Length: 118
Image (cartoon, rainbow, N blue to C red; front, top):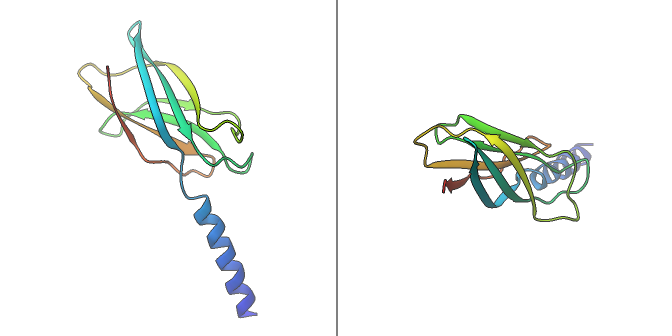
């Protein structure tokens, strides 16, 4: 019985590890539009369908303050990497860099991508 429990725990642990990596930001473009910013973010993530997919990305100040969030409504299994945009992101005056990172529906955040504002 203990062997079965160990095998199940090992298999479940392997599945968790496979899903532990959040989306990776491949590229960021941004431009100012009427006092706010429009960000276009390219993500890659091993989406498998509704059970595991990149479900959003955020722009944060270096101090961790969230400046904008773009939800992603569905998996992109056959579209990798993919780019989505969000307008109306307000960047405080004097800020020269922001961090952009993606999230998956398992709650895993990918690595932060440091972006220098144009």
